[in-house]
Amino acid sequence: FTSADKSHEGLVAQANGGTLFLDELGELPLAQQKNFLRVLQEGVYRQVGGGGELRSDFRVVAATNRDITDMVEQGSFRNDLLYRLNVFALHIPPLRARLGDVPVLARHFLDVFAAKYQTGPKDTARDFMEVLEAYSWPGNVRELMNTMEKAVVLARNQEKLYAAHLPTHIRQHHALSMLRQAGSMGGSEARAAAQELLSPELAAPGLPPWKERREAVIKEAAREYFLELMRSVQGDMHRASEISDMSVPNLYASLRKY
Image (cartoon, rainbow, N blue to C red; front, side, top):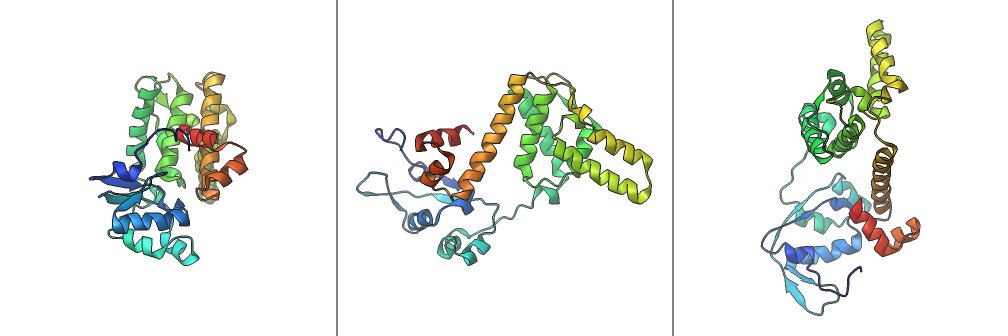
């Protein structure tokens, strides 16, 4: 692997005496599941290129958005590893089931990205929050975070965010809902508001420089591509290298970057 000429302390070693957090547990390949089960059961591991076994004492916290029980039934996740990890489970409902959290999270991310891009303090218009709270958020908090970053980039130095700064598909979702409501209730005001949301002219306020917009779009596209790539190959870097036509070191670098 990259920089294999030097000694690197792995995550299991670093977690000794502390906590090891496993994100996206459902993406762990079967071969690694077997190895990791032994680490959990016996508290021993072998370093890459090392000859002897070392010990590490740590607690484990794991997270996943997949149904691990279904994966066990399908044969893509080891049931013994599930039993070993599933000591105490916390179920976090999807964002669509707790829409009351959306304004709080949006405000938090707004402050974070306003500071990151040095745009100055920002506020949100009523239509901005209405559209956010009407959306189903299939990508959960991560999608909301990315949406707020886009909005801040688009607004630049404007002091207030409007619905116009939101992605088209999110505005369309709310607009179509309003049109359906207007159709069933005969509301001309709702219909007019929906048409305004769908208007492409709303994308014009506060356009950033082309280079800034291009970099933001490339970053988002790259993040989506590499996430989909690694999910499709279940973490197999050599297969991912073949599909992406990238060398393994370059692929690792891109994964770290995005």
